[in-house]
Image (cartoon, rainbow, N blue to C red; front, side):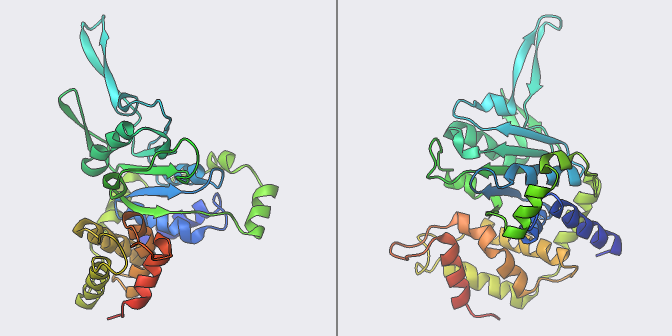
Length: 308
């Protein structure tokens, strides 16, 4: 890892922390998710800064940003695009939808119907969309940052398991502490402050950083520990169904990105533990009678799994 990359990553987290106050660990999770090439789901009540965080990430990384408000009447074509007949050209011309951006903010994704939610699946997995029999590549890098409200709120639909599995991380911001909230009340409007941000990295530098993540070393003992955690999810003691191999790879990629943010060229067990809840809790369902939610169940499982 070069000194220049380390300085850029530190500056990136510092800059976003001026917009989303008092949430530095959450910002580090978001940056790690994008460095690992994954999509991000932010679940929380309205008004805690989910949309502002997504916008600040895109601006700070120099990426083209597109926002779509998901509603019950949003159609797949509203997201992907549609071909329209143009008389002057005597032909159908494709008009790309908001998905053709480098960062797509899917705001309140669980307010749209299942068909529209599913329209994102190919884009998230393959970085391409199929429209009217033609495959169209999406810009690179391509990220989906989705926000969703708690499922007990009116007008929401649960995301299908197949789509939840495409999100590398799911985080919750929560309410700010008292000092941070006072700073928000007394300071400049955070959405206005975004206009004053500058790009800390270029898209090309971001893709180079993603390659640096892949080069972070994971020892045999570390992989043994990760496999022990994956096996614990499949044991039937903690969860109804265990993690897939894809989920295990996602945990390792996220841990490598977290190690890079810590300016290390190797993954430590702490890196696995730091990203585990964010990368697996949304993929798992606790066994009946556990008496704990997903997050608490993951933490209990980690405590019961010995370190290498």
